[in-house]
Image (cartoon, rainbow, N blue to C red; front, side):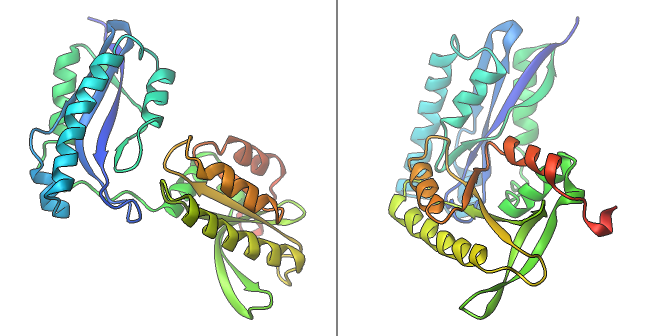
Length: 272
């Protein structure tokens, strides 16, 4: 029998968003041609307790999430039938319960594949690996996009007025030298995110008003990681940064930035 195209997403629990450490608690499988959408979750919270010590109200919230998630998936089974609609559903998740981007899998038996994915990705005794850092994620994305030869890393920059040096993780040259600063913003913390935006707005203004001896005129960019595409902090952060002519790029939509670097970024001397 010819296999069908399936797409799966791992359901993860992240008790501390600042640390971005997760444990796999379930898996979701969609097979469009079979109109199949099902999720399977761990029955107890033992692995979460072992990894994070979760108990009390946190454990109760986790158990309630698992129950409501199964019900939500069942109710959405008639609406979610494409990779686009699946991605939209994933993007609505956030905070302590997250879903990974859809991954392709060949399917002959929907139920059998769901069981196999659960056994392989969730029910094993090994601890779930830590989520890679935001900086590492961006590095991999630049490399996979084929623009790694245009990206400078760990750029030492003197901070005007403050008389000290800082390092910016990424940058590229296209006449001006663009500094790319990854920033992780907290979910549901608009006031805190406003303060963080003010910090980088001020820093960006200082960089852009003073030519750098090694890199010439500077442009400052923030690459923001938010809990979801609908995070209300996005608009606030964007406005604050724009006051200092600092550009905000969103982690979930870097296509324009990648295209700009590909078209205008100069290849590094040591990469040519």
